[in-house]
Length: 141
Image (cartoon, rainbow, N blue to C red):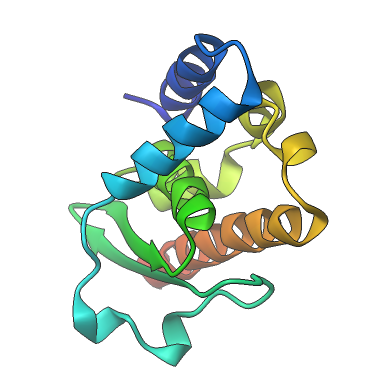
């Protein structure tokens, strides 16, 4: 499944909920279903800068695709990173770098987050794309 297809799937899922309390609950559920990050990846160098709560993000290359794992000490933030992992994990570095993030606006996520959480969301996306750029550069050497 392409990034665009995954993003559309997320947009469709969030559209099923009538109000934002239900969407928050769904986001929290997504966070709870996030696979555990290995303890050795829960280190300060894996923390995303710019997030109010702690978010650890790890990436590794597996069969030419970037696989992300993450965790957070805040339930909403864990839900946000779960959405991003679902959209971007198991994709090629090129696809991640080139992907747009319009689906976040379609879900209505940014407008329903506090300014600090919205900044954290931007930082998470930036970090995921930086990992992809690094793997892209390695592949081209």
